[in-house]
View 1: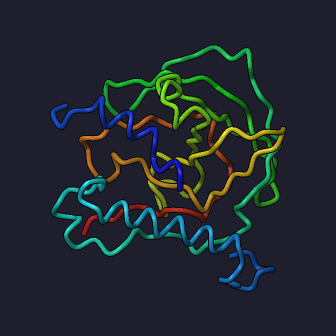
View 2 (view 1 turned 135 degrees about the vertical axis):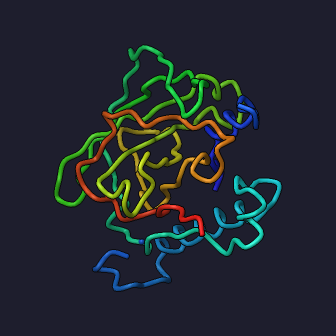
Length: 211
């Protein structure tokens, strides 16, 4: 997973402590798509277990066994028509703290999910593109009808890469929670209301329950 939470890496520097199966696949765990999703889940769990990379406070990390994921479901892997927006004006994306990130709408994804047509804005961080490893990184925050029940109320994020053509693959199985869900010392971008999906996305990371 080349881009594990890169937008949060930027905000971690700025922020101080003060302040998952398609029915047709019949649970074929050996398929390439399912293997890719499972690999993502394992890598994310490893990040949370590692004290050097985990957003979890020690009191939660010491007993951490793994995040709660929806079962991998290739229904939620969509190929979207990608409409680039070269004339978009940069803006400041608000966050859960006073921090803001400089973003631009790099493009709009048009796709069908659960029998409904949707579109989502996909952003490029003007603060990250100066770093070589993030020059082709895109950020997709979204809201859906599971928020506040099965998933975090503030929405989730997906990391993407700039595509070569006019289509982009969005795997909602790779949706993850903002780090501020786990630790309030982090500053996390707020999901724009225009990126609300009027459907339930039962894929990716579920809500974090503190025991």
